[in-house]
Image (tube, rainbow, N blue to C red; front, side, top):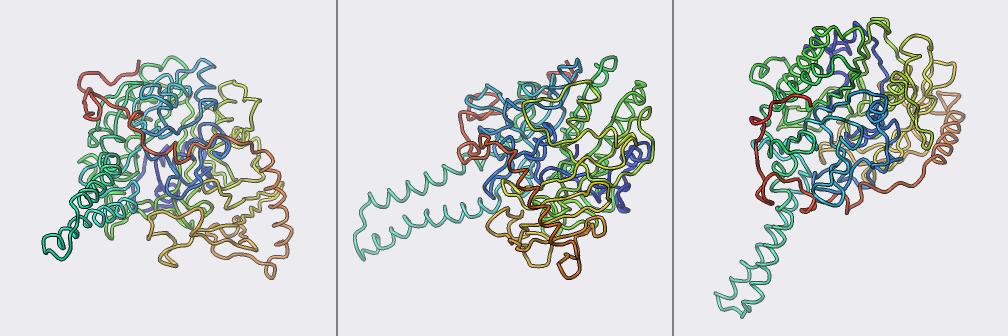
Length: 550
């Protein structure tokens, strides 16, 4: 799974400016899905849905706030609830050796620094090596900050204003215009200091707090050495395959590519025609090739299902001056963070299994990242949990050609806790209708992105549509021409069908603890992972331990 890779960033999906021969090889030797959809346009809720086969609203992994729509602090108390069952846990129970290499970003601890209640090892993985959080520009000291960038600018301005007060009070005191008690001046100086330390104690140390490497429960690097992390992850993945090549195994390689700050090896710098982003895409593709080579070398390729995807669409607002650092979403409108527009949720979907799946097939039916859960359960001989709603569908009939129509009739596209869009794939018909009830307001207007805030809002600065916007995605995948009662005779009946589906869907939702509450998402010193003595955390044990699977 790539991070923030646009569906248009791969040659097999129409890109002609970046070279991706290894992912293209997967597509030519396997089955390619062209309407593959993330359950959310942000990484944390999308990954929660991917692992559990359930809309993230069912597990409380969605935010009612615009500020925190993905986990923002490794030292927070939010994460994927322990009562959720991941596909890794299903396969673990079936005798598979399970490993996660790379990004987790689904929480770490609940009540104490070392309880690690949300850790991958408590969600079905035998082995974990990687970032319990995720990559940020803040992880590279020379880059502009990314986490809550606009809030931090306001905090700096507020600190300057509060800090200016005691200096202004000194002017009339020394000019003897009027008397200002020293206690008052000291009070405002102390207030400025406390205000500054209250936010800088967390934001000022993001690289040290969030950007760490772990092996299982042990911190290996704090902060991590970002220039070496790709090589370390690849070495760990290859070691895992080597260790378990004679046993059934599940390896989830969760790339840090192609999220900013776009750290690439020296040999890939300037390698592409598309700047730092293109270089990072090509390095990711090279890493995919190394994994495929390992499967070939161990004669596992014919007996191994390989799946490639991204957690959400490219981040259009990711800029460094005038330089675009985010991905390309092809012909699709919108991008990361936009609840319903296709560019934020349509992702690559490639399956290769030479002895089972016909090579070179292309499927345009609506499918979801949530489908991986029941698909892997079916392949592994497991039984789906009966005590909860599973929203994903087994893809094997579609992939094998035994079915020509997706089992998804309706798909619901949320932005945080808010339902923005619904997709309806009519039974026994190729038509795919899509209704937008809420869309983000682009800034500047007409740009197709929210450059003013860095990411679009789910509520507040949005447009509510009544009647809703209706598109026929099967004829207008770019969502360029909204339909209306004058040019679409089925307009009213489609809207009524959608509203009935929404009512039925909401009837299946049950309250879940809100993982994105203010209390859960704020940084807590007592939960902050620390290698050494808090708050002077720091270590590098990577040279002391060989990077091999257990």
